[in-house]
Length: 333
Ligand code: SAM
Ligand code: SF4
Image (cartoon, rainbow, N blue to C red; front, side, top):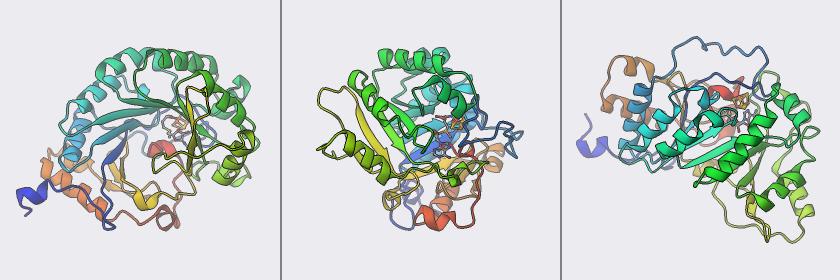
């Protein structure tokens, strides 16, 4: 039996990485069908399984906070499909030890939720938008929502007092020629554009079709468009980041696939069906649902998180061997 001191010891993995950041997928459902994420007829094999209730999300966050998690990100699927999303944010913000609560969204339903989310105390939003062209948006997402998302982005930037980041998955032959346009967006908009690598999590495996655009190519284009640009010290997940003189926003390159930040990874993930995923490339996960459904106490939940952390792999490459996760929507990116 753990002593009270051990019970609340911070979550540290076998490689002495302190886990302080949890990404919680609150639904596996989505209102888009991004080609690199899911098929049109996407059927997640356990999609019919019950998803975490707001009470269960609360219990998970209380347990995580008691072992040193400070940062929560809600993701999905599309987290704004949860009608109670602002309730989840408010609840997370009220839990002692939680310092920031953020959200990754495709932005379609922001017009419905933004005011409530701000009121609930949300600390940051990452909005995923891979193109600034309406036709391309339709081709990438298979849904005609470009105008609504652009309008919601404008409203978001006008109302938000917190950081806004755009997630842009770069694909050769799809949006590889739009780097300049996204940089231009940072001239008048106070946001960070994050160019990200494609990852091998999609039913169609489109990343094997020559569309992958690595950080070297992205950075090369950024440098040739902005000669002499100086890399600034960014977060550990940012390979290269800078802002241009006179621009309100900034640019960052995220080596999502190249993964040169595994050695400092501080994340743990929880799927919408209550599985703990210790690494993005870890396929199995540990199931919290039986504990949650049987009213397990905080100690039992934290023990499972410790077990997951103890098996967190050294890096994504070792975890990825033989893995075939079919959609990022299961784990929230
Ligand atoms: N639906 C929300 C959204 O799109 O922002 C949240 C969930 S989505 C799975 C989270 C992030 O994962 C998005 O920024 C999306 O672009 C990214 N993503 C999904 N599949 C990906 C893939 N195969 N490679 C790289 N990024 C991917
Ligand atoms: Fe939905 Fe996000 Fe996947 Fe696109 S990337 S299909 S918005 S979960």
